[in-house]
Amino acid sequence: MKTLLMALSLLASPTALAAAPTYGQHGMALFGGKDGLYASHLPMFHAPHDYQVVLRVRLADPRLDAAVKQRLDGNTALWTVAPEPFELARLQPGAPAPLLRFQADLVLGHFEQGGQTVYPGATVVIDQVLLFRKLSPEVKTSAVARYVQVGNGKQRYLVKEIDSRPDFDHIVSYRAAARASNVPVSVAKSGVSAPDAKALAAALHALPSAIRGTVYYYTDDLR
Image (cartoon, rainbow, N blue to C red; front, side, top):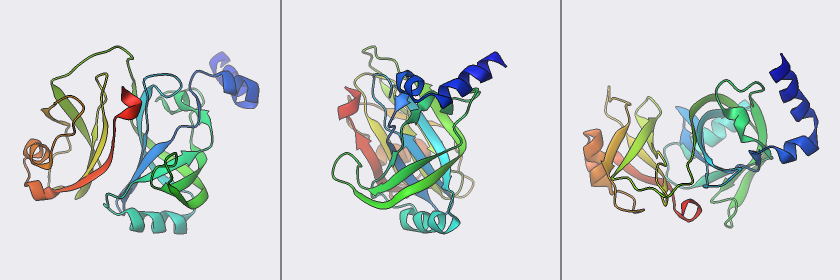
């Protein structure tokens, strides 16, 4: 009860919120389609953005939700979410005051790099937290890149786990075969270069044509 009261007091105090370690504007890459929408936090190696978070989301307005799903459906054009500021730690499973929804602009392109706001002021509802990992700021290298699979239908996505410094944020769209496994896959890693379609397809035991392309690839924030 004491923990819950402390959390509620934070929510009620703008000054306390601004001082919270994970409070800020947490931009996200938006991807998905008719089988579901997903948002991936654009992380950095410093607070308040030092978490890798992937969410399954929907839009509170059913018409807008359907329109966005149809427009994004498996495509690789970059969309981003520019949300109102919030405390990222509230997305952690088991958080005393979990974040259930937030207001955001939906932007075609990168919201900080000249993207076009197409759907302003949308209410984003969080249905499930698929990934929540704190990033280590220590310099580290890894010989492999591990990708988690997002989605369970034919249209799926690979999201690279950020486990090195420097590293790269990478989201890939692909078409899964019937009854394909959704377990994570690993490929050989070469610095911050994204693996090619052939390597990813081999890890998935699929043809290279199954890889539809990259939704998001970025290294600047992960140096």
